Length: 561
Image (cartoon, rainbow, N blue to C red; front, side, top):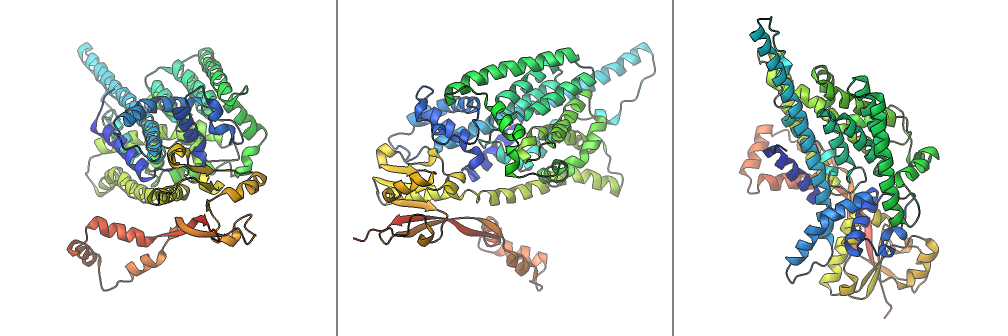
């Protein structure tokens, strides 16, 4: 694998996004809790696993968490050995480590895809040069090389567009099932198409679909169909390798997941029956069949430069790039038939779309001569677009980091326990808290600190346990609104609050623009001459601009004595 400095930058960017938003949300809860259980209990003491108490609507595959836990385990062991005598109060560093492994697998797959794409373009250019040289030697007429043959920076622009966007880099380290092994494997399958390894690309994508995320089947079908249409593989061979991937993947999933769930199951098949056949996915919302094309793609590409460049990119794309790009749009069209839509269901199509836009970007950057104002504007779009995208992505990151109040509330509570040497207490975490960042990794070691974290959801069971709680973390802003707190003996007081992003303070913008006595130059001068650093001033501006509101409240039981 060819390595460049931009490859390192991609890993650094993904890591920076991870540390800025280290907590997780409800869609990520199964994977992160499963990784926690595998790391702590191994694969034999599954009776202690969290999923038996909180199974969810349908089973999810353990194969992905097993792989990530296996990658994390050596680093966790090293961390424990070299941690010295000071033992961490929680295992939150292991949550960070596991997310680092997720981010690393996604980053390496994107780098591999980039390398395969660039090799494809380089070989295409070399073959064209060799053909021209052979014509010269034979004394035949020489065909003038087309300008689009000069595409030596496609890989560079691909990484630039990837790392300056928001969604791919922000979610690359997150334990969503779409990113835990799934996206890396689809990237590898797409890269194999670029390397003319069509049969095994179909095999891998079909395997990934049945083991990790069944929506990948639409992409696998697209890769097979387009490879057949462009006569790169026979229909019989495409079906053969697709079925091989399907049955081998089903066998692995059936073996592994049946063991961990204690019942025969292939989670992705069960999920398909539950969500699609029975139509339960629509309970989480239904949208227009055109939503992916009219809304989600536009949301994923801000500004839409990459999308606009796709047409030009397709015009000059080699056959293999046309195969993966058409497969990507085929995948999106198939997923459009499902009423319930989420952007992460089509995330596997983003790398081919970005690669197609990068092809056009490289062509414009390398081949358009600045001989007019029109050409200058056209060339300027290529570097200006990712720059604008980066600014917007950093703003999205800043806001997104505030959307995990459950993790913040749990951290604040743990700090309270440690600073006051509190032991032998029970805290109840309500469902919204657990859905927004409170994970098993973030809990204090019970054997050391004696703190019990209760997550009971059943109302009847909760009522019976209520008198045993010393602390609560709940969304109710007043004690009178708490459940089961209608007796004089049941008294609570708020000791902490955690906040969530609630909007933009328009008055700050109005105040900025209302300074009629100061032009832009004067405002910049104020920034330069101020005693505070520019970073501090920008931070203060963001703090004033961003509004937050209390969402979770930590209560302590008040004893009459």
